[in-house]
Length: 217
Image (tube, rainbow, N blue to C red; front, side, top):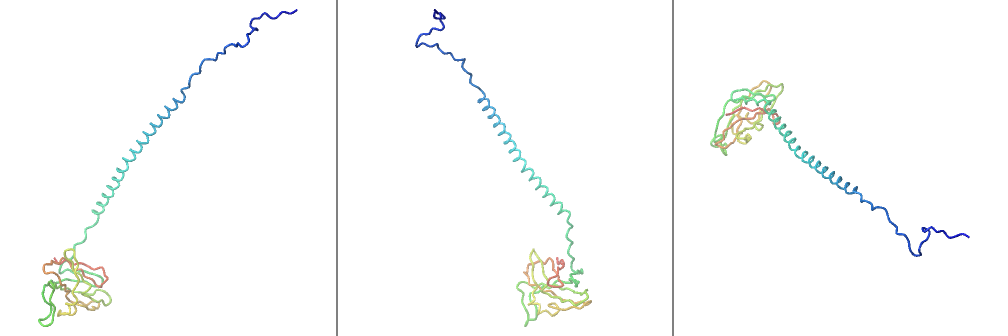
């Protein structure tokens, strides 16, 4: 007859269990905190670099512009200094040329009235008479016109007075056709202020020519 086992480990009391013991508690990982710190450092370093780059770029641009502008200014001065001075205008008695004509201013005269006591014209200011000799050096006829001539003084331009010119003794002063090789003496008349000091007369062989200046001062 078999006897029950006497092994005490096999005998348990009803309703009683052995307590269960877990392993040691797990330590929390520091990896998230480390990642946050690294990310913050990178952001700070990156922001600082970006700021330095922006400052450097901002501080560099004006200097470049200033250098370019200075160079341009210096170049302009150099160009102006290299330009030849404008030739001095010829004076009274000197022959000058425009197109098919050579002109020689021979005399200046002032009058308050042109014509006779019966028929004539009074100046608004004073009549300035510019006596001029005109020669045709071309190979065909060319017409001299008083209306094509200009007077300059004080930065202003004055036109010839064709209306008063009809009272001059010499009708050739108004409109005259000159053949090649011929010379005509005439007068160009201007009505100007009494205090005006004439500087130059601009003489033309036609209405659309370049013109040439003669000093009257």
